[in-house]
Image 1: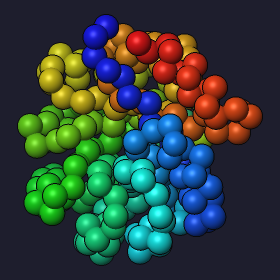
Image 2: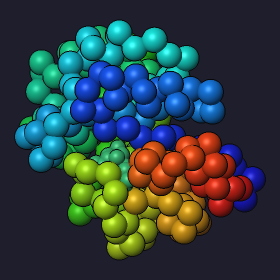
Image 3: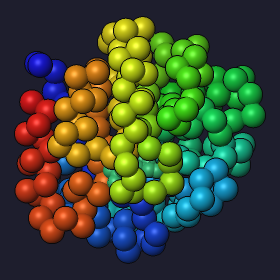
Image 4: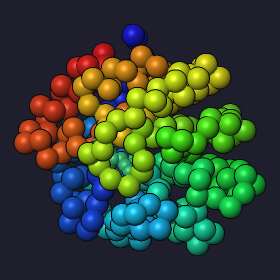
Length: 217
Ligand code: DX5
Ligand code: ZN
C-alpha cells in the first residue's frame, strides 16, 4: 500500500476548554483536528456549536468540522464564516438534493474544502451526484452522536463500492476506528481515518497515535 493514510484525531467538545485542551495535545503531532459539532436535534448529543467560538482558538492545526446539525440556511451561513478549512455536511441533514448541491458549491466558492457524510444506513446513491465536486466523503461506521461505539462492520462493502465508483477520491471513515478496524477500512479503500476514543483518554496519546499510524502503512 503506497498511498499515505492520514489519521485525524476527533474531539467532541462540550466546552471551549475541552476544544483548547484537545488542540494543545494534538498540534505537535498532526496537521488536522476533526471537530464533531452536534446540535442535540440531528443527533442526541450537544457540543459547542457557535462557529464564532472557534475563532478564539489559537492553534496551528487545521480544523475539519464534522457538522452533525440540521443544515438550515442560518447554520450554513454561520459555518461559512467559521475558521474551519474543511466543512463536512451530512446528506441526511438537508431538505432537498438541490440544497445539498447549493451548499457543496457555496462551500467550495468561499475557498473551503467540502465533504459529505453518510450515516451507516444511508446508501451511496445519496452522494453520487456530487462526487466530482467533493474533496472527501465521510463514511460513518457508527451512528453519529457519541464516541466509543462499536464499529459497524456491515458498512465495509459500502466503502469498497465507493472506491470502485470514485477511484481517485478521498474516502474518510469515522467511528470505532482502532488498530483492527483501521486495517479493514484501509483494505476497503479508505485513506483518511477520524479516531476519537482510540487516541484520547487512553493515557498516552502519542503512543496511541503511533500504534494506529503503524497499522496503516
Ligand atoms: C461520532 C463522531 C466521531 C466520534 C469518533 O458521532 O462523529 O467522530 O467522535 O469517536 P470513536 O473513534 O471513539 O468512535
Ligand atoms: Zn466525527
